[in-house]
Image (tube, rainbow, N blue to C red; front, side, top):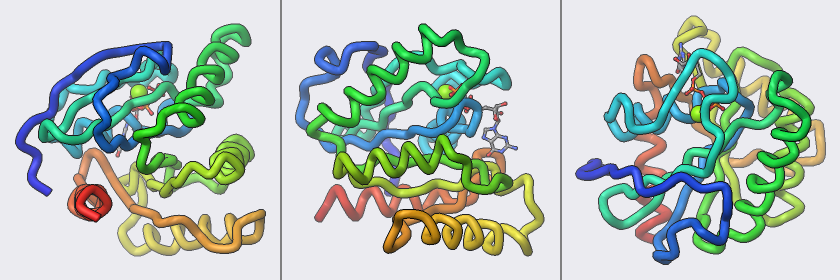
Length: 198
Ligand code: GTP
Ligand code: MG
């Protein structure tokens, strides 16, 4: 898919106030600092479109971006960040939960995980929660540039095998990406395009 336009539309902490246009929507979710906002910028080839930071907890609201005037990409706050106060965590969790339960135009949630790490309880719990709530999702491995090319596939497959040992009967679709080396850009955009034109 060629990206012809990418516009920031709005930030929100209230799902009911998110854009009402019934366009297909895709949301990025995952632990703080996993690279959600960076991946959006890489996909859109716009450096400062989504705000990024080396400090976890940068994205704090539901951010809507309108792409090619006919679909939405959504940048969400990270979960599982220890340094956010308990009260803030609850607020985040509340609207992340509401977002996935109530956003009817959501086509697919992308759960981002750092390719260097083994499955973490907080990610497994979140994927399980999506499954129980019948939210379609795919896994995106991030920061692949941090591994040697020869071990990238191996590491991703080991992660998926561990997932299968849990509650899952089949693995969700998955993508290997790097925002710095642009790995995975075409695959991910083509996947979105294919669903959009189904
Ligand atoms: P929150 O908004 O805090 O939840 O974080 P986020 O998931 O949006 O992460 P963000 O995109 O802000 O990136 C966090 C840090 O990881 C930044 O320092 C990025 O430069 C770095 N980073 C993100 N993606 C990559 C990547 O593919 N490779 C490398 N090497 N670093 C990355
Ligand atoms: Mg972010």
